Image (cartoon, rainbow over all chains, first blue to last red; front, side, top):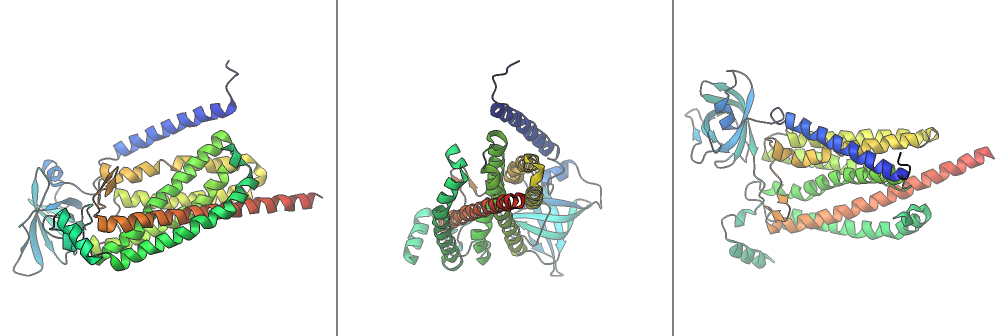
Length: 151
Length: 242
């Protein structure tokens, strides 16, 4: 037996082993959850494995540019949600969030009816960029000039 | 490091360290908030609501930094039996929980006008709510261990083990927007890169520094309080014996 090990080193080794086991368990759990914990399906996932008709699901992706069309009743809109592989037509009646615009992200809650996704609710998903309104179309040099002017 | 193990030496240092952190912290944090609220232009998509950024992001950072403090201090307590480590871990719990609650509240208020909902059960929001519940559990456990001081070191050790185990949630929060489809957007600031324009980034960084200093000052203040509690308890016990 090795009696030379100091108690604090023994504790350190024990805790490191316990932490490795714990992190391993956490990673395995996260991996197992990777499908269930997703908040929405991408268009390509919906196309590859369509849920049974009428089951409530969420569809998330980009609103295709130029695809939003308002129907004659004035409250119903049709648009396409796409990812890099597939596109799904969506129909929605109601008030859209402010950030619901073409070329931006959306999460639609609803169900498949035939090939169309009928949404009860729309949530806007924005990207991680924060840019002032005045500068969104400017080059970096122009933006710097504007900031310098306002000082 | 064991130089700081002496509570008397720590208390002498804490007396000037606490105002040294709190005063500049308050100035920087509220200065940066004023900058963010009154001087920064609106965001291209979100408009005026972007101003919540300057309190939401620092409190998210401190909610997670608070539990990281608990985890590291718990490790030091368990392995090296450092007498101040357990105190530091317990002192970080309440301010950490407060910042976590601020982050959840401001996030919810921000989500309504931007996403169109107060709350969703996506990976990021859910894991951050779990962090708040972990704080509540930790505070309750630490309180019970302190009242049960007669039970010896065992009770305090259970608290430290809970602090270490709960740290598993921190990387999950961090990765939640990468591993799973979520309504919350992916991280804006990653190692050495930022998708936040400089106009927003500077007040945000200063707010983060300011709130971190406030957090540090509050932790030191709470450590002083916990040490004073222990001293009073010991003195009362000696009086009762005599």
